[in-house]
Amino acid sequence: METGPTGGALAGDDLSPSSPAAVISRWTFEVSRRYQHLLDKTVPHVLNRWIGCLAVVLIYAVRVYFVQGFYIVTYGLGIYLLNLLMGFLSPQVDPEMEDGPSLPVSGSDEFRPFVRRLPEFKFWFPLFTVCFNCFDLVK
Image (cartoon, rainbow, N blue to C red; front, side, top):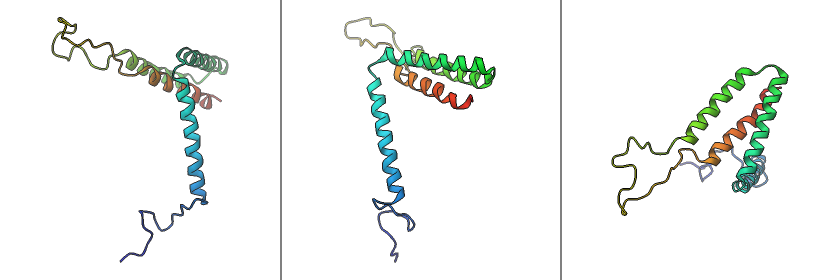
């Protein structure tokens, strides 16, 4: 019979409230919670988000121009952004693969508006974070 700790913890784990692992875990949880709160506050401000994103992209482009390098990183970034743009502009369901008419022909047919495969916020967020994180690559 085993006499080790219960609850799935390993013998070497010390997860008491004052242990360094617990302190770091609480700190990272608090930081991620505050970060998510800031992201949630930006959701209704679409124009301000895109203006900020455009500013970050322009600063990145000017920095690459003055450094006269890092074109391969920028090329890869451009391909990634085109992939995001294609997901943003394409429909969630391919209309050619559906059976039946695409427009309602009677009053009982359901109207289905254009639904994007990638929502606007999920298009903006990777674009902003990748462009902002590329500043670390271009030093």
